[in-house]
Length: 176
Image 1 (spheres, rainbow, N blue to C red):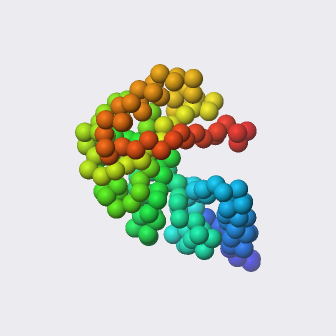
Image 2 (image 1 turned 135 degrees about the vertical axis):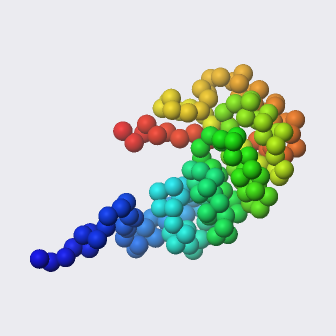
Image 3 (image 1 turned 30 degrees about the vertical axis):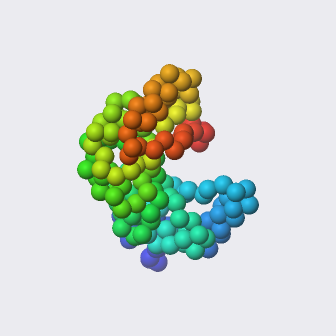
């Protein structure tokens, strides 16, 4: 019986064609450059320092991750501009402060209460995006709720350590 490469794989494992992956990174980086937009890829799928190096070859220096733990992982490898694309968990304020002290940390906020808590606990500047619901109704603020959006921005203006950076949305329903 001939042994197959896949016979030894017992847990979820990333398998990819490096040449195709690098070609895709190159293509996306070139499109972003051509259109003068920031390319901030999401590293949640590969979660790999090695693949992160491939992105660096194309001068990518800003990334997105899905948790503060993942942000720490990549910050420890020299990534200095990281967005955590998941509404912030205020119970992780110590981790937020540690990261914000050493990198440009961008977080997502959905409430005035989160802003108030961060205002009272931050020790370094944090940039924040307001998470907007784009129709999936999983998370984020309804884009028509301009009152809440304004309240969040106004509340953050009282803290010198919170910097409103913009809006962030994820059209997760587009996968269908």
